[in-house]
Image 1 (tube, rainbow, N blue to C red):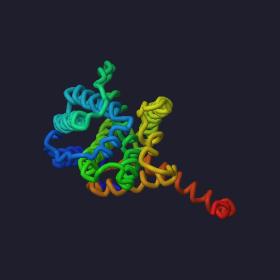
Image 2: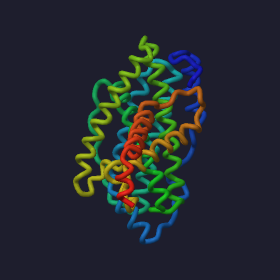
Image 3: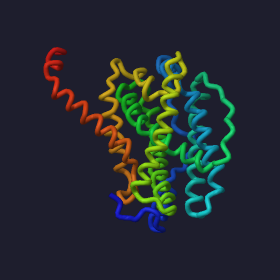
Image 4: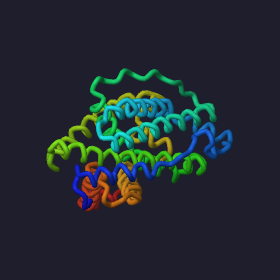
Length: 287
């Protein structure tokens, strides 16, 4: 648990300075992209969500870039502007891969942003927290299955690390923002739950669209079986939970971290284990 008071100058300086200090300098075009065999190329091209990922990253960069100049505090403004640069670089990384490997993905026009850019930024931030938590499990599954060469996973691990930095930064930004507005821990938690609910609603809409062939908008839930011979929901939740914990250990323990989604996953896993223990005859019958 953080020993630093949310909303304090010390808290602000810590989460902003650590975000800036851990920024990595690289050009997606000069990364060590591997040469792929025909079989590996075919596998990469069958993944149905690259167009959606590219659009999402472009939209993220545009939202953050538009919001950053409106932040009054210069320290926070600098850090958010850096996040915008990284989000745009994620889009460039996906575009570089699309072009290099001949993936069928076209650039879609960005929708008009709402006048309230701060709310758009917050909605995006909570959505990124949800997507990252699910993405941790999906990434581990794909890597363990050796669906693609390890060299490609090493490149995308750089992106995964930056996404983890983004959600840690966002959680601390929100705690700092809400505390300065006089919200206590309970009210902050309720507000976070509401935003997570909105993010979940958007995800469920993607699930419905993802049921259409090759739509690909919901990788973590409906497309994870692209990488697995037999998809297990319980194993997927366990992977999300464990990978989240592993990646969060890389950050200063005084920084706040997302708590709601790991807590919900832990509760779900406990419930499934309890169900298993209460139904031993069912387990025996499956042997």
